[in-house]
Length: 138
Image (cartoon, rainbow, N blue to C red; front, side, top):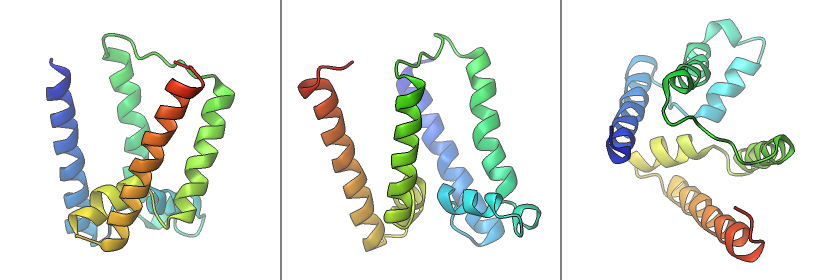
């Protein structure tokens, strides 16, 4: 299957999941907010967020089993942990994550989400430029 077709199907499925979650539960499907509900012992079993977050981990696991070519990770585990912590810090600082702002907020034409998504994108562009062209990594 062509890479662009996979991306198109994935984007469509993300859109359906977000719209479905909003329609059924009346809440935005921002992953950081859902994860906060799952990590809170008071709301863990009182929220459908558990199933949504569980799906985020289960589906890629099964995709990885059948994926060809095999998915390859080039970064060290320490680098991935540092990156994850930085993303978590940025999520708190930006009052939401890329899914909350980029998918849900942008589709609602939220000015705050447009600013946050623009910041995410700019930071990503700068990071790739520095890593590839200045440090020579990858």
